[in-house]
Length: 139
Image (cartoon, rainbow, N blue to C red; front, side, top):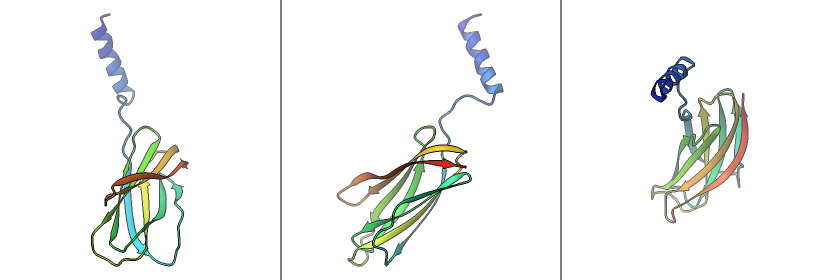
């Protein structure tokens, strides 16, 4: 049997067994944020649920004009990175503000995942930092 014929047969066998190996599927994200008052600090909490993990926390900013946006990616199998971008709109009042977020990462299969939370500061000085890392068990 030639190498080309063997490759074709293996490809057909792989398709018959559920498809070829592909990159990890990308999870979905439902992201919300709002300004809160009266909490000096809030820890980042990851709470697994069926099909995903709910991540909550707060970013301290120097004024009320900052907004948060979220994105999620799966750089490899069983790894999830939640990226929270912190941007200044230029409007607002000059006092320390807690920007609470609720990020529901969805469309995860059952199992153990390496979760990282990264804050990306889109206002000079531009920087990013991993602020939380843990292993979560999704039911």
